[in-house]
Image (cartoon, rainbow, N blue to C red; front, top):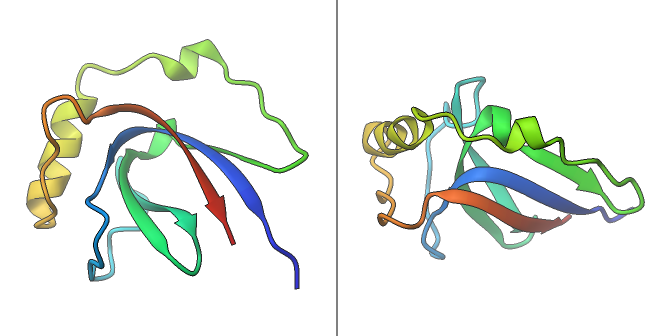
Length: 105
């Protein structure tokens, strides 16, 4: 059994650290997705713009291209609409942005 430790960069906001039950459909191919971070044994959730998601496994660095770090002016509205549509806690005004996370699993 192997363990992966990944670094994750994405634009969005973290959901509260509480056990939340989500129905299917949130992980599909949409402009906004629900992703997990922390660990497979204790997943934490993050609402992210799908095209902003970058993951790098330990030992395999990835270059962060600056053009990928440019924020589209519609992203904040898309994230807020996704949260409302799926009855998720809405972001605080300064929560939405670029975040660096980790995943162990």
